[in-house]
Every structure is written in structure tokens, then in C-alpha cells.
Length: 344
Image 1 (cartoon, rainbow, N blue to C red):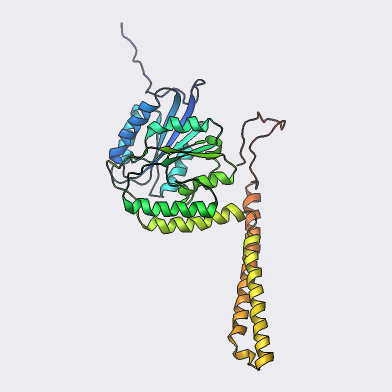
Image 2: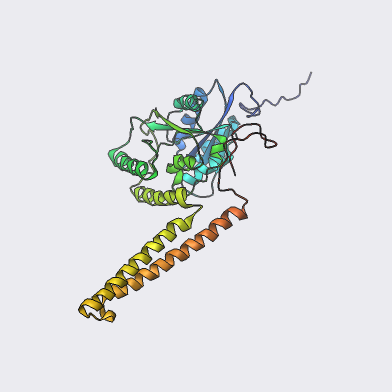
């Protein structure tokens, strides 16, 4: 008897979201030139999450040139739970992380590095903490296995971020974190903003906790860290502070600066008039007169920028039908079933 060929599904080819007994977990991993690390990381994730979770791992190849994509493509043929997104060029870690979140389909989203320094064995611990009522749980590298040239700037940056944002976490740079999907998909990560994911999540009212996690030394590949990142982190901090506080009211910031400059201009002009009245000093030769003119012009520019900011803010929200608020949950509003819902 001739039998018909049997097409056996690849491991994980069953519907990822169909399990009712297990939580669905998406793990986003941005990688660049990590050919020797991606397979060991996949094996570790597979071993750790073998029981208790329906999972997928989304590798985002951020412009690798060492054959990382070919390695990932080979693994993807063996396991449908391994997804691969290949970017056309190197867009940076933040953009790669955003691509991983966009491609995820689980009810929980995990982010982690692809260099084997984060330990997948910590993922169940993060999820257990999340189940205590949090929307996001961050990892804190309790014992970092990095050189001084990396750890010292990181400590300084973390201290400044805590001071400026008022968010008390000790480690903002640890990529290992878990969050609920509705929170993850409301994040928009640009530039070097992946470090500020806790701040962005806090801006939409997410409940956040942090627990210690393991950190291993890099075994293969080369670190992409450079001292130039420190200056970019500080510039992004100014951006995130402005967005957090003044995105919906730019005139309060820029207009406030404008009024301050106008006040200083009038003070400078008053000094000019007093010097003329008391000592007969010629006003046209007095530097305070020119200073008052300059301060007045700067004040006018600040007010004008504030007005432009108000127009742009309204255009940003109204053209996309966005709302300047976020709803955690609601009752008796039609299709609502009581679960957390975040505005788009």
C-alpha cells in the first residue's frame, strides 16, 4: 500500500494564542552582529519557558553584517515560534526594540538583549512580580559584569535620570523587562529612548516595579557601547522631560521663558533710564539699552515658539484623532468588558 506523504508541523506551529491554560509571552530581542549568540539564547529561552507559557521570540536584526540573519533564518525553519524581522539598515537599538514590540502578539511582552548578558531564567520571576498587580516590571542588574568604562557612566546617568524625572528606580539601562501588551503597544520609542521606557510608561499611568536580575559577562561578539552614548542620553533626557511635562501645554514652558525675558528687558531698560537720570549717561552708548533690546527680542521669539507649539500640538492630536489622556478601565460604556484599555 502506498502511503501519502505526511506533513508534520514544525515545533510551535500550533496557534500561538490558542492556549487557554498558559499565558502567551512575546520576547523581543534586538540584535546586531550577534551570530554566535542567537542560537544559545534561543535554546535558553526554550528550556526556561518549556512549561507554563505559550511563547514566541521575535529577533530583530538591526543591520547585521556577520551572518546573524542567516543563522536566525535557519532557526526559524525549525521552530515557528521563532520570528525574525530584518531591518533594511542599522536603525539603532530603540527602533529595533520598537519593531520587536510591533511584531509581538502575546498578552505579555518581554524585552531583552541578544548578547547573553541577560538571563532568560529571570523571565518567570518578572512575570510573577507582574502578577502582583503591576503593568511593567523592570530588571535591575544587581551585580553587573561589565568594565568600569561602562558601569561608571551608567551609574551617573541613572542618578541624573532619577533626579530629573522623579522616578526612583536604580537601573534604567537594563533591557530585561516584562510589560502588559496594552502598555507596550502604546509606547513610541525614538532615538535612544529605549533607556526611558519606564518614564514613557509612567507617563501613561503604568504601575511599575523593579527586581534584581542576574547579569553575565559577554561571551561572544563585540559590545556596541561607546562613550558617545552618554551625551546622547543627556540630550534625550531634556527631550523626555519636556514631553513628560509640557507636551500638551508648550506655551506654559516657552511662554514662561518669554515673560521672564521680557521682565529682564524692562529691568535692563529701567537701569538705563536711572543711569541717564542720575549721572547723565547717554542712553545710546549704554550697553544696558542694547541688552534690553536683545532680551525683548528673545522674549518675543519664545512667545512665538509657544504659540507655534500650541498649534502643532493641536494638529498632532486632532489630525490623528488622539486624546490627551489615557483610560485605565471603565464600566458600562458599551463594548467595555472591564479590562484595562489604553488610548491609541
